[in-house]
Length: 533
Ligand code: FAD
Ligand code: MLT
Ligand code: ZN
Image 1: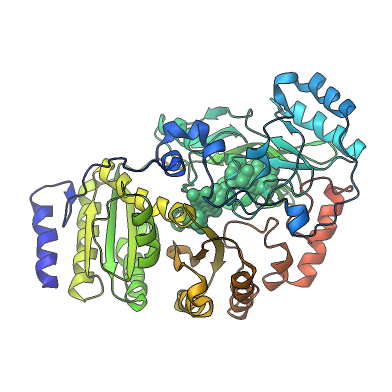
Image 2 (image 1 turned 180 degrees about the vertical axis):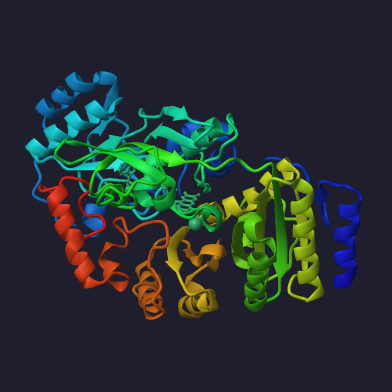
């Protein structure tokens, strides 16, 4: 039976079809009125994503109250301050009304009470804002696309929101060196489109690409679905320009891959979540975009088969492997139930893998991926699947993966965990957690970036409730820590995980982190209540 399926795949291949499918993926039709889904799926909706995106959960209470936050010793905004900023930026870029979209996080878990959003249009304006705020002791939260999942991008109390949205230009893309220089507020997808115009691509891709900013990506050291190929942003980002809390501009821009001139301070701003400085500009090494992209979406019967298939992918696809994602059946089914326009080519398996290859020779890559699938099926590790090189179909398969996180929050509240675990123990926690939560949870599922040992454990329930919360935390962090994993593989620490940092970070290191924070932000005005408790 399996062998017949294998033959089926191969027969289609030899017929010269660019798409090798067991069952054709039909063209997407939008049968949902979900604004979140539309915004995330169709870039045209992205411009209005600020008001549309986010969880279907109700608007939360103010976090300062629910979490009993002790407001820092900061000044309170006055009319004089607002007038000062209006003079500096112009009235249009000083917002004092309709601030909900800036105050509430994507997951509708955290809600601040900022009375002011500033939208500077240049590094000099960012510097002037920070200098003033530092002198006045006004707290500031830098905000990119507000797609962060750890409550880092919104105020906790009444911090001023510093939106980078106007710093949105791609300044240069050099086809010869592959180096692009871009302002921090540029939307990732726009940056990638611009890079593609000269045959390059941004080495970072994630489901929030239509809304997140490249500066937000750098500030969170975002991972996404290409890390297995290109590594993380500590490697791809060649330089940054950052404005410190004092208003000083730190020029760490570099146009070279190799530069060993002392301490590499740029790394401090990659992943520090706006607590050490405001990233205003950066240079990034962009690889050449691949001529041939193939995607396989396969069904497997056990996690053991998933691991065998991963090893086989690394061994047999080697240099062309560009993504290796896992989705369990509950995660997939939730997305399919919520978004009827998604169309999964296969169904009925406990695990699914999305494997992508990118290379320069279509025939070679197609042969390799077909061989890989065929061999996996012959060994009984892969049960069924679809392979396609057709760009439209490739996108449709990726859409399934990208909608998984949105499916879980479409109508529910979701506790989200983003952990690194040793591959052999990668999936156990999902079953353990399902048992712990019992009927309190509507869905407990796992998906994520298998190729990087990064699991997204998600626990959905009708609405936030303390009982389930206590069953999940701090258990999940203790479990991760015992396995020497990381409690944040890619989303960061933000507000939600700051009390758990010690599960993954040595106390001596945390001590030095505090010293660094004091050195760069002596009045602690930059993104307070985040990362460090
Ligand atoms: P924001 O959410 O606005 O901010 C995030 C943090 O960075 C905050 O602490 C903020 O203060 C700080 N910050 C933002 N801009 C700046 C700046 N210019 N200077 C200094 N600090 C700044 N994340 C992944 O890593 N991998 C994924 O695959 C992934 N997929 C996602 C899919 C979906 C559907 C969603 C909703 C989110 C996903 N995320 C993922 C999380 C999120 O998109 C990333 O963390 C992203 O990098 C945040 O970018 P942003 O511009 O929205 O930043
Ligand atoms: C993803 O990989 O889909 C993102 O990191 C978002 C999530 O964890 O849900
Ligand atoms: Zn992820």
